[in-house]
Image (tube, rainbow, N blue to C red; front, side, top):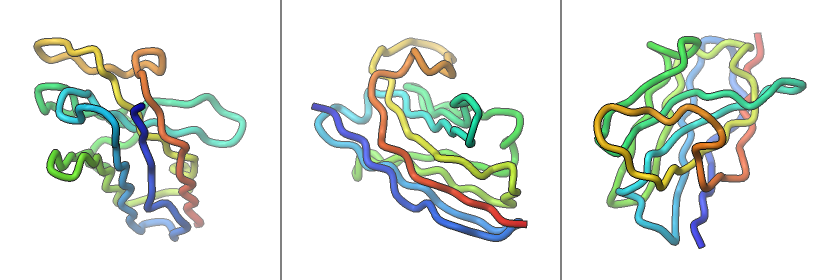
Length: 127
């Protein structure tokens, strides 16, 4: 059974930074595309960032240049470094794993493409 556990959320003032972590277990981490999504109150869950099977990264326009996704295969962990945070970044952040390997430069950005999900971690940015 694959498990994903997020950590690192919290409260921060606008302009601040946070680093989220997502530790995985029970699967072959290096063969997954790993993504981050977020869901603000009253809104649908939306794509934030992904690192695909080839190690390429892709970001939502709203976070490009501010957020960075990275992985540590030795620790089976994916990170999301978030800088220059704004109140609009307030949401529950989820990590997810897509086990269906695809060649080339393909980025899974849709919820239905992911097979495993974490429980989420709250990020609150105050102005």
